[in-house]
Image 1 (tube, rainbow, N blue to C red):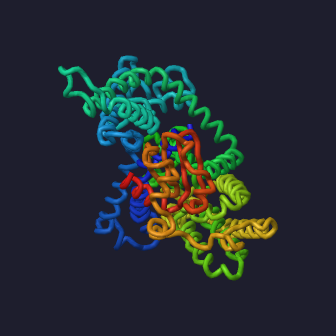
Image 2: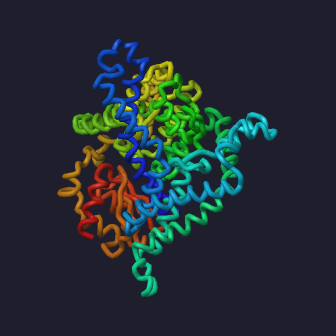
Image 3: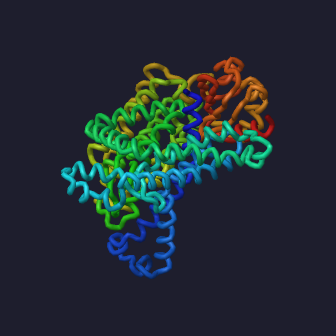
Length: 532
């Protein structure tokens, strides 16, 4: 299960990787073409309708918007190609074809059942005796995908297609057919079997999805009714799952599927927290962003922009005097990374393995941040992470009336103070070996050059993984080397990884191995794959 979730999380990151740039383009374009902002700051002559900048920014907004409007197809192709072990291109193409076929079949079956755009409106269901709530819930089951009238399965449909096609691609990429049909053997068989299989799924979905949709909506409403308490546990467990890299397999379900809620924006029903935010961002008539949609990510701003930089300061202040000059630069760069970009691993992994209690405190504080900002109806969006860049684009530039961003600034200083004193007190009281404390402490961050040419030999890493013959798949995320091996017993003990190999930590489950190397993970992956 660990290995499968690891690979699924990696596959999710492929389509998600395109969203930050799309979000930035949409954020900049929408912010600087918003008539209210243009008129408020007297920028009509520069950014008003008809100016060159207006056309450029409008185009940027349109580019970003088209990405978020077609997330189901993007996820289908991305997941299929990401999970395919062989013939990734064929898997991606087959997924795009299967996605279209699935929705066409669904549309055809709906027609047979008498469900058309005219017979699935709120007014129609109310005319059949339903009350407004029941009619709205029933009408939300149906919608359009790429112009096809279908059930509103959204990104979840893309995930289903991607998983199915990846499974078929891995099973049949080398399929041999009889001589008379040999042309369709191997890679050419993947789209054929994908279309046939997804056709069965397409026939089933119209009969079961209305019940699944209502069940998901009911669960989402229940989760929403838990209020700040529910958001505390969401934020807490997401931070804990981050240790194992499994959060990538969970949060997309809340960001892009009905689990994250549904909302009508500009006449179109949108599913998932981040999808709703960016739909509202692209809609000039939106006067206030939905805190119900942004509750699954806004809570990260306080720990990422204020809390962890303060924790880095506490680690610096508690370092041995002789080491402060060395660790000061390390911790400052890690704190700056967290504040500017929202990428927290450089700080978190400096204390996770030497002082896990600090990480537990950090997870609790992050859960509280999610709960408090949700209770205050703060609705600041996010592309990938929660640093000053996203805060500026989706908070400051959008205005406090739309986002309530001012609460992040108000609570930022108290958050920093709490992190600073909790970390400082615990480090001193329990003599925790954070950077710069003790004779054997780590007093530097390893650069890519150091890791590859000096401190870590690629051949030693391969040997620690059981040798070339033991490697099945080698990949990486932002901070972790992710490897699937044939025999987990051949993988070296933790002491080897944390000793000569300079790893921050290692996790082993089933046939999956994760080694925490920070920014070195991607480089090590590439070097191993070159010589394996």
